[in-house]
Amino acid sequence: MEVDSAAPPVTADGPSAGGEPGDDPPDRPLNVSGMQVYTIKFKPTDVDPESTGKDETQTAQVDTSKAMQKKLVIVLAGTGGAPGPLGVASFAAGLGFHTYAIAYHDEYNASTGTGSNAEIFTNSRFNEFDGKGRTPSQVKVPRADCVEVRVTKALTYLQTKNPQGDWSYYLKKDGTVRWSDVIFIGHSHGATSSAAFAHLVRAWRAISLSGPRDTNPVIATWLTMPTPTPIDRYFGFTGTATASTRTTSRPWRPPTTSARSRPSRGCSPPTAARTA
Image (cartoon, rainbow, N blue to C red; front, side, top):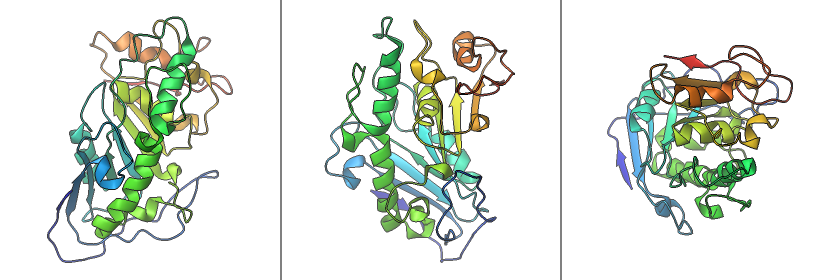
């Protein structure tokens, strides 16, 4: 574990925490200090000896000199990628967000091996998040390796190693994560996982960079499931000149609506695709 820090403690708090009905409000104010960038690098096994896979170097970052956004950004890499993209994490930290580039089970290719079973997509993505062993699935995720557990334990660990960042602000009194102050953002494989994870918990935002997919050769069942995360909290970005544009924009278009119209009640795809 490495911590990059060197500055006198100075409180740097931003605007008051927001929220909407249904969100979990914080039970105390955010209390950061130091007026600087803190970068903490650590592996899952530094936090939890029960971790067995994807033991790669993760990066957490917070810039306490900024007006704090009071939101935690979880960054999800593409297929087989190292935790990151770190450029996304550092950009968000520079805007006043807490960021965590997590190591998670992204080692499988979601576009192969599903056959005609749309449930395999859903089981695989959901297992990444909570490690509950749904079958059939393309990936086996021990509970200690899942995103839910790793985020929970990382916040406790980071609070100990970097109290200036006040990472436990995102934990409830019972030690579980306040997901409604969490933003999932991912690229490619991580783009799809970001949107899928927001179908299991009420997130502040789910942002997909070149995604989500899970539409070939069949459309994943999770794409039309009801979602605890409000529809207007989903965002997607894709390049209009890339070969994958048609694939990545497909989930944004429910069968009976256009890309920019609101889906029917209970349908989960976001309300509009953002293209560039």
